[in-house]
View (cartoon, rainbow, N blue to C red):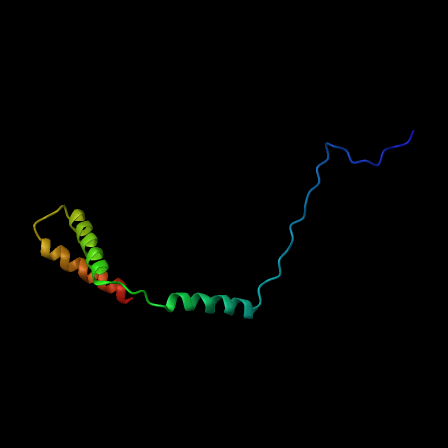
Length: 88
C-alpha cells in the first residue's frame, strides 16, 4: 500500500518570527534629531488662550481647597503655575 505525501489536516504549521536587524547609530541619531526638531519649535499662545488656561487652573485650585474665599490667591497661584509651564 502506498502512503500519501499530502499533509495531514490536523497538523498545523508553525511560523518562525523574523528577526530584525538592530538599528544602527546613524538611524537612532537621525530619529532623535527629527524628534528634537519637533520639540524645539515653541508654540505661540495668544493672550486669550493664556487667560483661559489660568481661569481653568484657578477653578481646579479653588475646587481642591473647597471654594474658600481667597479668589485672588487662587488666580495668582494658577497664573504662576501656567507661566512656569509655558516657560519650561
